Length: 238
Image (cartoon, rainbow, N blue to C red; front, side):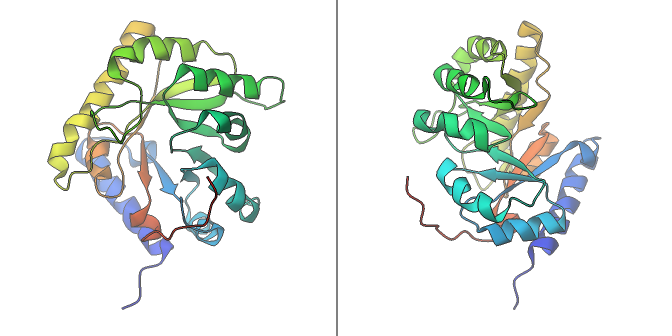
């Protein structure tokens, strides 16, 4: 049996997003689909763009450097969603429209310096990745440090802090994942009340749980496998 095309997958995901939004009285158009294109070739990104995807998420700066040559003709929005290494910050600040995995003030300062005087028309959008579960393999800012970190990042002149991101534990039962999504929304609301920052963006939910994330307030969902199919490893030097 032939595998469904990226376009067919995209249309199915749109239907699922709309159904989840409607269940909680939200507007489907208020939810942004980020196609997680990591390890998928430029031709797959081209196909997804033709289907209607406009936002794409990459995990590694080096991989995006290689693939962007094949996507220069696309008017897409490029998100870095993987952990950013300090020695790649300056390059990331110039290659991506948004850094969705910021979790450290020193990194934020490097991004800010890299954008200073370069002539970009707008500030670099950033999200703070929050460590909502105490998993050793997960990165993210600690919850206790979040208010001070958010306040300091928001003060950097070349960055625009617009919200929070999280990667909860992978749990087959989405009912067990909901508390993590709900916690991120609560943290955003607490920051808004304490610091007066609007923080409209909540990036949470992936292929297996994005519907639960939408029901808990996600404004951006990061979908890879459900859109592109299974991943194949690319030869990229770290």
